[in-house]
Structures are given as C-alpha cells and as structure tokens.
Length: 590
Ligand code: C2E
Ligand code: MG
Ligand code: MG
Image (tube, rainbow, N blue to C red; front, side):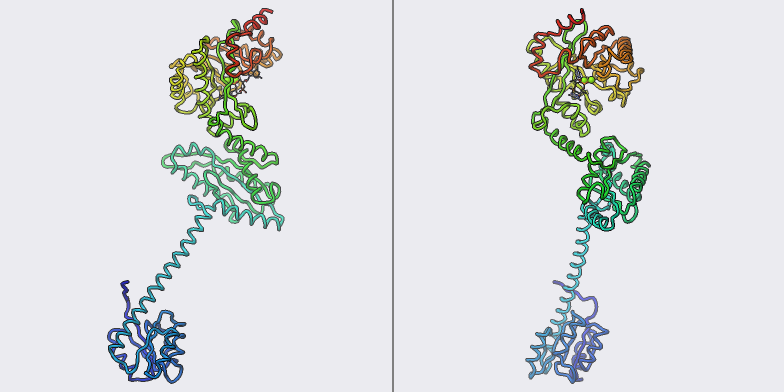
C-alpha cells in the first residue's frame, strides 16, 4: 500500500529528562513538527488541544507514569501511536506498556540509528491507522447510503417516488389500529388511470410520464397525513385518515376527477384521460387492512366495468361477483388451448322457399366445472380482456374449415355467418386475418358472412366504411347484427357497403302483439329493400311470427321454430333432410 502524508507528521516528546528531549528534538524537528513536555500531566493537557501522530514517552517520570499514560492517550486520540522510552532496568514495564497499547519501545541509552528506525516504523503505523479509519468511515457511510437506498427501493416506487404497495399496506395496518382505538373512519381508494392501452401506444416513456404526472396530481388532492401510493401499472391507492363522514370521501373523489381533467402534455401531444375509482371504508367494509384492500379492489373492478371515469363504493354483494368474474377470466385464458370452446350452428332459412340459405356459427364454452357457459357471459369478458382477438380468430378458422368440409362432403354450398365483436372489428389487420384464414381453409369468400353489430360500426362510421368496402371487394358478405338496438343514422346505412340487416330478436318477439314493433319491422324491411339489402329476422319462435314476417316481406328467418343452434353433426342431418321446408309450407299455406 502506498501511503502518503499530506501534512508534516506531528510528534510529541514526553520526558522529565531535558537531555533526552533535546536530543530527540534535534534529531527530528527538521523533518517533523516536534513538540515537547516534561511530564505526563502536561502531555494530557496538551493532548486535549492538539493531536499528534506520534507520542514518544518516557516510562518513569515524576508524576504519572508512561504506563498509565498510554491508555489515556488512546482514549483522547485513538490514532496516535505511542513509542515508549525505557531504561534497561524497566524493560518489563515497557512490555506492559505495549500490552496497554504502546506500539514499540526504544531503549536508553538512545542509539540514534535505532531511534530513527523506530520513529519511522511508528509513523508508518500512524499512517496505516489513519488510512484504516478513513476506509472504515467510507465503508460506514457507504453502508448507511446503501441501507437508505435499499429502504427506498423496498418502500417507494421508483417512477413516481410515492410509497409502494408494501409501505401502503404497512401504513394502512397502523391506521386501522389507530382508527380502531379512536373510533374514527378510514377510506381506502383504489384508483386506475383509464385508457392506459391508448397511452401505451404512444410508447412506454409517454405512459411513464402520464403515470408520474398522475401521481403528482393525486398527491395534490389529499392532505399531508394521507398516503398516496403507487401499486404498479396504472394503479394507485389512497388512504384517507380521520374522515368524519362519507361526504369527505366524495369530496376527495370529486377533486381527483377534476385533477385528471386537464390535458397531460407529452412532447407535442396533448393527452386526455380519466380515472376509475373503487372505495372501501373502515370499519364498514372491513375490520382489517387486507379486507379493506380486497374490497376496494372489487369496487374498482366494478367501476371499470361501468366504463371509464366511474367510481364505485364497495357493496356487500360485490365481492362474490367480482371473484367469480376473476375466476372466469382466468379459466377463459386457457379455454382455447384446452379445447373447451366449440361451435354450434343455427340454420337460416328463406321465408318463401324454406330452403336453408346458411348457418350462423355460435360459440359455446364447455367449462370443466361450470358446464356450458353462454357467450352472453363470456364474450363481454373476452372483449374486456382482449382475449376476444384470439377467440374470434379461432371461431373464424373453425367455422370456415367446417363449412369447407361440408362442401367437400357434397352438401349444397351455403354461407357461414361469423360474429365479429366490436374490438375485433376495430383491430387494424382484420381484413388480412380474414383473408388469410380463407386461404388457409380453402373456403371461397362468397361463403363467409361477417355479422357486425350496429354499435361497432357507429363507433367510427368512416373507418368502418373503409374496412367494409375492403371486405366487400374481396367478395365477403357483411350483415348488420342486432339491427334496431343501436342508433344507426339512416344516412350512414345508405353509405355502408353491406348485404343484409338482421332484425334483433327483441322486435321479433312481440311483432304479432305489439303494433309499434310491427310498424318498426315493416319500416326496416321497406328501408332495407330500398337500399337493396336483405332482411333477416332473428329469434323466430312461433308460427304466428313466421306468418307475420312473411306478410311483411321479410327475406329470411332464424330461430327456434326451425332449429336451435346445433353441433356440426346434428346440423348435417338437417342439411340432409330439412323438415322445416315441409313444416313451413304447411304453416304458410294454412
Ligand atoms: P347473435 O349473434 O344475435 O346470435 C343470436 C342469438 O340468439 C344466439 O344466442 C342464438 O342462440 C339465439 N337465438 C336463436 N334463435 C332464437 C330464438 O328463437 N329465440 C331466442 N330466444 N333466442 C334465439 P347465443 O348463441 O347465446 O349468442 C348470443 C350472442 O353472443 C350472439 O348474438 C352474439 O352476439 C354473441 N356470439 C355468439 N357467438 C359469438 C362468436 O363466435 N363471436 C362473437 N364475437 N360473438 C358471438
Ligand atoms: Mg349474430
Ligand atoms: Mg343478433
């Protein structure tokens, strides 16, 4: 180790013998900063003011001995090195002094060579001690810094600098204990920044900035004693303490929603977002922290379900439902891989010829525990989670392949209708996916019909027109499903490149008994025919409905009257021998 001294070493010589003091000073004062005193007592006084690298001390002096002095020197200045001067007759004492902490001893009569060597060694030792101390100090400082850093990482979110989940839970636990004793209320708010998907498309840096800024805004909505934490992703949690009444919570919610309103400024872009909030209250919604968190989470889940920018207080029935949904969501993720999905096919028949013109593919989920789950239950879930994209692709592929198989087996070619959900319709590569599946399964485009709901078209009519035009150019048929339930502007209908309208079953149900529904169906049929669109009535269950729809010049029908949706094999029987042809003839001629 290369040791370097920055200042001249300081040496203190203690001896009651003037001659020895003089000798040592003569020897060293040119090179070192030398001081001298005649007794241990004087030395202690001086050591209180000055610190020395090296103390050279006689053992036997008038008052306090060198032996007693050594520990006292070290207690004043731990890094001072002590060198004893000992006479021949008290070597024992010198050794004792070394046990007490002296570094070395030199013997009288002083021999210059020995003294110089001893002083040099002692000074080196003093340097070493200082170096060690500095190293130790640095290490300690580093350790304290590291510990603080580790704590920060363990309890604070790096992006926002806010407390993290662990710290929040800790504080919540303490707050619950305090609130219990003082019989006060607490509010736990779970907050999710909405439309994060949209924000993420701008890149993760942009998303990070939104999250960070949201954290700052949330912090401004509460007082010093409340905790705002980031739970990860787009989720924050807020702990409101000492709330006298629910009104205070509502006020905070209002201020949070206000705080989210101003645009988030991202390089050259303004981004608008909202927050969804779920709330649970102590003691009403839970007696301990975990319960409160879980229930605020369930409330948030419900708030999100209601769409963006909603808040929801926890209610007792919520938890059962929410956890059911969670469970369903998880198992849906594996449904395709586990081959739990299957398709049923429901025939569509022409009203006057009663011939089967096509089938609609309707997905079913054979859940290992729950049995057959209705699409009405899991399609919305698949939409929410994005699973609809892979699910929809599976349906499309399976339906096309099945239809192609029927053709290969010699059945009269017909169209298969496939439902396309709103989210599927909005995905940028829909047309490519469809064409690729057609190519892959070998089904000609004219035998595929896509059923698109009115609302997914109306969400963005202009881009819908472009997509539909593309599909139509490829020879694919498009119909509007559940027609009458959305809010189609009729002027758009004229511009939409579609082939058919499927009248929603809610209008068909009462068509024979409710004059308004009858008038509506009639109007739809007239309008559609003017636009050269076919009209299909859904949910036809009775002979009366069929007769009436025939009168209204409806083109095709679909419903339990002819057939429920059937597994592929069962449908084949229907294709082989179609009893409804005879049945319908009988009905219509009656
Ligand atoms: P939808 O496309 O309007 O399908 C017609 C629904 O009416 C089907 O319900 C069918 O079983 C039912 N139905 C047919 N005839 C009658 C009848 O005479 N009376 C009554 N009461 N109902 C009848 P299902 O199979 O439960 O499907 C419900 C909805 O789920 C479908 O409505 C469709 O929107 C959606 N869906 C089904 N399969 C898929 C799919 O593969 N992808 C997507 N995105 N959605 C699907
Ligand atoms: Mg449909
Ligand atoms: Mg429908």
